[in-house]
Length: 232
Figure 1 (tube, rainbow, N blue to C red):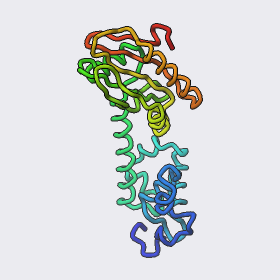
Figure 2 (figure 1 turned 45 degrees about the horizontal axis):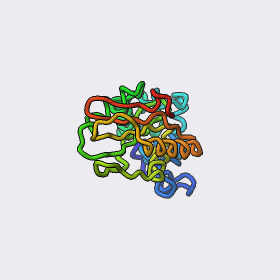
Figure 3 (figure 1 turned 60 degrees about the vertical axis):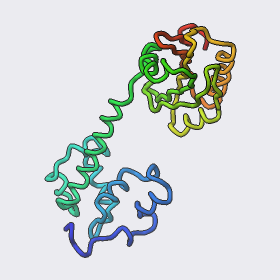
Figure 4 (figure 1 turned 180 degrees about the vertical axis):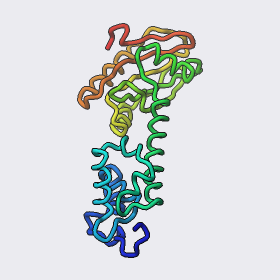
């Protein structure tokens, strides 16, 4: 039935049933799982739209995408309107999603201590001749979503734009952040400006419900943690 000339094209659906157009107008996050699958299969049958067909397939796996990803070509082609090519499209998309999740899990180290932060950031900023200020953005599992150099300056210090810091946090939907900057002088004692800046960022984070978990001063061989020293 897959190549049935009577099959219903997405362009002929009612406007509310046009997933491609909806994606373009409202973005990918506005689409349901069924609508995303409908884009993959392109068309349904004479009596069933691609969205309805996708809903029926999802219902067979209790709307669980992990279970859907375990279905074979033979399993999928049992549904009227799904031929081999459409089954392969669904399997391919879900396999790409599975591989993406695996890569994200490998690339997103979990922060369990200040030492873990030091080990990540020391190779980046520990031996620089100038000062740099970085932010680690974390999800609710304390895994790093993104590492961002917020500013770089001379040996005497660097400027930090708090607005840009939290703009990125909101873009990433981060729930926590860790601040890091290096001291090229090798000094491990926070300056008064370091302490004031930390307080300023922490206060701003409280209004956005984004926690400042720590602020590390990093040198070539050691570090100072605000959290470990009860300065947060």
